[in-house]
Length: 197
Image 1 (tube, helix red, strand yellow):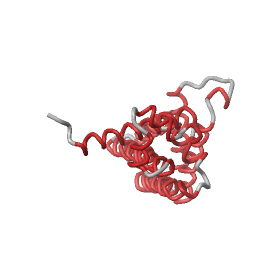
Image 2: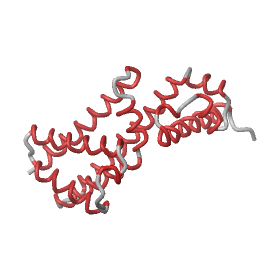
Image 3: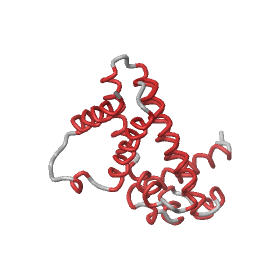
Image 4: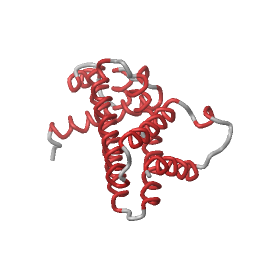
């Protein structure tokens, strides 16, 4: 039995998007060319143009996938934190999740939020993602702890800065000292908790 054409083309598009995200992680926006994506996805240049229009269309579709994954992972982390009755453990879950999200999506964050900053093609989706995450963090802190709006906003900005720094720099570029992930997550949780309470 033949695979329906629509299913084949959707999986081809998914392969192109996955290849784009892999190239972004490896080399940023400059690494994404139509030829490189087509080769990595096992597709033709023509099929890429047919599906996405051009390189910008491909990058916009990949941006939507990447930022959508970040938004979904964030929502899932907050759902887990909501289910945790202990406030300190809830903050710990969120800090660990934030570090995991920053690590998993480092390439996309660097490409879209840093390299793509001030590029009009990417700006609206970047802002929409940042504002959604801000609303999630600020709203949760205010609801769970009764945090002052300015302190909740400051906590979000600290987390945003942490994510941007991790997108830009490797750990060894930041400091010669070693900081185990669990200790880092614990420190982040305490810092956010100090602002939240």
